[in-house]
View (spheres, rainbow, N blue to C red):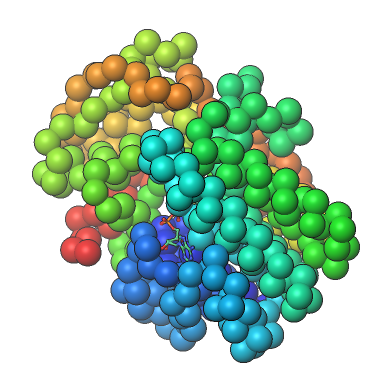
Length: 331
Ligand SMILES: NC(=O)c1ccc[n+]([C@@H]2O[C@H](COP(=O)([O-])OP(=O)(O)OC[C@H]3O[C@@H](n4cnc5c(N)ncnc54)[C@H](O)[C@@H]3O)[C@@H](O)[C@H]2O)c1
């Protein structure tokens, strides 16, 4: 299939491009590079040994998107192109609502106009909010009140309504848990600009000496050791989940959790990183971060049952691959 990967130069998008190409598909990357670099697309070509068409466009711009859809046959769209920093979304709500919602509507409209039948959307476990773990797709959503979480709920709703009204458009809503790690080549990985918002890039930057000390937000959560518990998934497993979702997509709207089903605390992740790489990561416990919940992990059985997908890589693989990328990374 010819797949348009919106946000394909980003962290999850670039790994998904590799998986798609290795599964025999052709990818067209659409990205405005607002949070990524064209070098990543070059690295995807290097890993796969295949050409990748790159369109530097903003996918909220309808005319640019229309030109890409008119330029070649497209069989499916995967939509990664969004902003993702929860804290920033509270400070700049309009930036988040505009980019994350308009991009969904513009891409979806282009699919309907050009008769594209498959749409895969990057949603997030944040839509579950304060629910009982493990999170199951059928749960009533209780999303956190931040604009980022709201954009995911709204995009899910828009795409679900659209698919109901257009039986020719099949939609897969993928709720990611916490992707970490990097491609085993060490060429692509998570390279956030500025101080990382997520735990693993923070750990790797402290290990590299770029940051002094890791701050652990809160040690009084109702968890195994008081620190927050999350479901960390290797980004390559997550990327492969997209290939399964796309290839096995049936008519209608389908929601899948992409996680491992296993919760790991902050201290457990630090310990696993130290053990996998033989490096000490100095940390200090500080106050809780507003909005963080005790535990978040998936019931990942539906994706296995219906798609035949499950996460394969271990926590050690995630820690080793994240460190290999950080060590090599020069921007
Ligand atoms: N990383 C996570 O922990 C996580 C968890 C759950 C969901 N998600 C979602 O997955 C998606 C991808 O996340 P990521 O970690 O790869 O982020 P990322 O920032 O690395 O990738 C997003 C890409 O989209 C591009 N982009 C943003 N707005 C654009 C626009 N209007 N037009 C064109 N390109 C645009 C950016 O330049 C970037 O390359 C996001 O929608 C995010 O909300 C991520």
